[in-house]
Length: 272
Image (cartoon, rainbow, N blue to C red; front, side, top):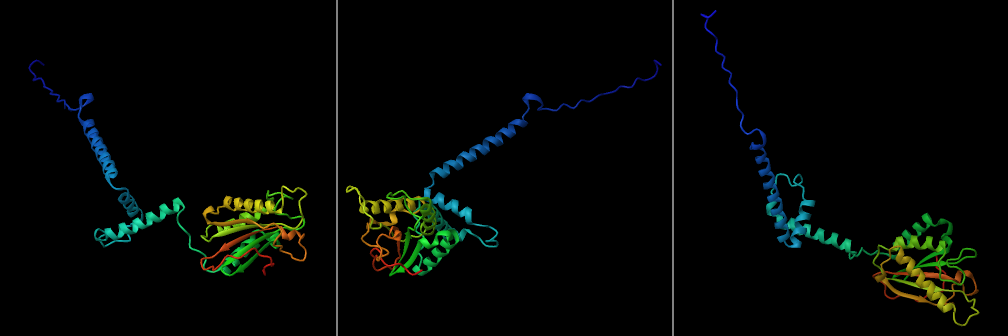
């Protein structure tokens, strides 16, 4: 046994450097993170140094440009045109947000009358006989009349009823997106007040003002209003009976761009 040659076993241990807290792999990741942050802040700095108009144009360029639609062509030579289009689009969007965009006016009063009558038929079919629409020279007149048991305002008061609210909402929805000038008139019957301090003049004017507020609440731009007036019982709707409830009414007049003159208060029932 002693003569036998002993085998020598050599165990090689591979030592891996960089293990533990003193390794260097995390430093690479940290360096990448710092580089990315530096690029990010550099981008922010460049954006702040760019004029607001150019930033808006650049934003709109990337919003509307599609590389698939421009495939096979270079957009570098078209940059001026694209930026110009983007600038116009941005301007339009900003105007819409500020409420300064003027919608296109309805070209024909007859067309608007028909669309309004359709809306009345669809949404106010049960009370459509209290809404009268007629076309005059250059505009459309909408008249809201009282009926027995169906008043637009509380008796002797400028406070609108639920019936008036329903009608005003439909009319407001139809005219709020048009740029046409609007006037509002109030009328009463010939029933007099006992008090001398308050008359049909005050009542008709206050009802016209109340109707104006309702229309504004339903989206009408106040800048479109050209006249709000009360006529008391001086212009009866039903001339043969000045105490007829239909004489108590609100007239909403919508002028069109080609209007030559604004009409006076109507005393003739319009043809539907």
